Each structure stands twice: as C-alpha cells, then as structure tokens.
Image (cartoon, rainbow, N blue to C red; front, side, top):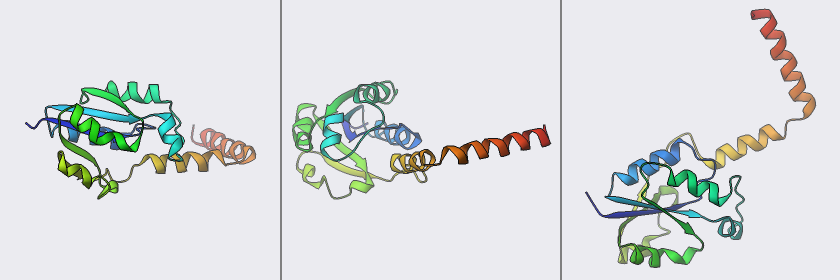
Length: 153
C-alpha cells in the first residue's frame, strides 16, 4: 500500500459522494489526511456553508477512513502541507482536473471521478427551491396529502 494521501474540500452537507471519495482515497495509501476548508476561507471564495467548520471537521474526523483532519485556510498551503506531512499522493475530484498539476513536482496528483447523481451544489439548489415554496402552497400540499391518507387509510 502507498504512503500518505491528502485531499481538500468543504464537505458541507456530508453525503454518499463524500463517503465514496474518502473510502477510495483511503484505499490508495496507508494514511489519509483531509483538509477541510474553514468558514473564512470559503467566504473568501464566495461560498457560504450551511454547517460550521468545527462541525464539518468533526464529521470528517469521525469517518473511519480518515486518519487526520487539518484546516484548509488558503489556496497556497498545499505545497507546504505535502512537504510537512510527507504526502505521496494528492487526490481530489475530477471537477478540479488541471488545477493542481503544479503539485506533481512534489507528489503524485490524481483526479477521481465524482459519484454520479449527488453533489452538495445540487442538494443546496433543491433546498433553495423547497424553501422558496410559499406557505400557502405548502399548506395546500399538506391538505392534499391528508385527503389521500383518509382515502387510502
């Protein structure tokens, strides 16, 4: 088995795609380090998380495939992290293909396929659509469901 693997991400609204990624990364080496983006770093990227950093980090830390969680506080820390932790493989989702090729001077760089049909962005869009439904429409939907329950109950 290889050496230390590192990945970076926000891991907001933890879902099966995140778990699949971490499981696959753990199988690529003997140690997995996950850098979780801080709220401040995400804000600087124009991203807003639903779950605070401390909770996201604790969720990721609790996954059995993860050996260590570190904070991701800026774009420029990757070379330092690779060197500091003796990383042999940097891996991240294929949606980032080409962005981190500069790390190939220091370690192997791998871009992995995403889990089809699930993404935090899609989950947030669905939640926003749900939240934009009017109170009246929701009450009507509950009335319809109650009528169906009575008809079939």
